[in-house]
Length: 230
Image 1 (cartoon, rainbow, N blue to C red):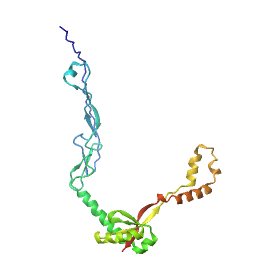
Image 2: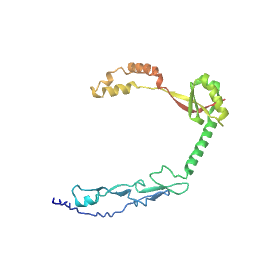
Image 3: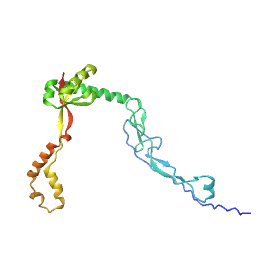
Image 4: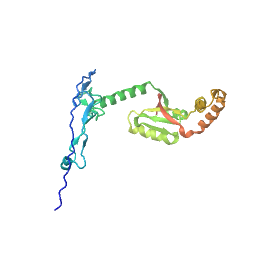
């Protein structure tokens, strides 16, 4: 008869660490101490494990625990913010309160600003706008339109379907390189007078010509100072 093999017992020692300390929290009116971590910004994480060949581990897969502290999953630094609209607590998992009141207020504030911006803008007719600008910006749909021949009719269709259509002129930005900065960087590992001995003006002319040829870099931005009327 085959002898049964005894499973050894690995001795473990449990240590409990008690931490006693005080934290100062200067809170604003819309802040409260997190009830989960009690303002510490930390929580206990379980790191369970077993030991191969251990009799206790053979009965229970992960009988041992090596707990540690980790960041609280509910708050930032032990503090929760209250929704300014309904007073509910906003946790780390929520960008804002689900009540939606704050989002509604932001939308209303944006619409008010949009109306004010439109009223203050200098107005020019659509035909003049296409003569001055290659690109126009339609704020209502957040879209840039190019080429007067193709898009003039589209804009008229937008006017029929979108109330209070707001069209603006645009500004154009293209790639720009500064010769002084290029030379300064290139000469950083050379002798101390290398920068002063370079033809900065000559390089700038070359760079300006090269930049003008990079038409694909043209980027347009709304010019809210000029509105377009149909």
